[in-house]
Image (tube, rainbow, N blue to C red; front, side):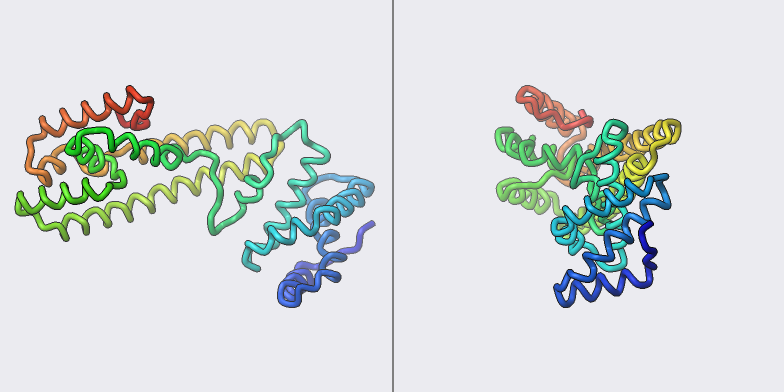
Length: 270
């Protein structure tokens, strides 16, 4: 039977090892502590416990380097997650598919990972195709969906604002306020997706996994809808640019049509 090591003892040991870079003592104690935490959640045999200690020792160097990304307040959670990951890889590979580093990143509370990010992956290629559109059409699309603008579009926007006696500072303050609110909302929704992704990895109960999966899909749908909301409405764009709402709709229709032809649909907006 493995000896018991208290949490109060292991954390100062980790802290000291980080300072001195002397891993001898922590390498002896940490794997035992990790497997003890594993045994409290999983009904594992003594042979499996011993095998898991050996497994952790085999990957200790890699694990330690990964752990340095985490603050001391979160690092124990990282080590627990790591041992669960190793256990599943070794004994339950057929039950739960793992995704390596992504699984560990799900417990990075500073920047948790998400598999789904429907807008970030396509934003660069989308902007490249915007350059092929007429400038005014590209500007209208950029305003409705808050797409990054090249210098020529920024200059066109400033010219239209001044032409219509609109205060550019007021416009950009409005943009920043909306972006801040939107980021906060997306972060909240993303955190819920991450939460249920973690729960899916943690549980092996089929009914709970089904329920967690449904909850994750609900939050993914909510985030998808949030990403699909217009940044500026047709009415607001018409006001800023000094054109009619019908003209705004025409530019949006033309722009979306051209983007679809090259396979760069504006996600689910159109």
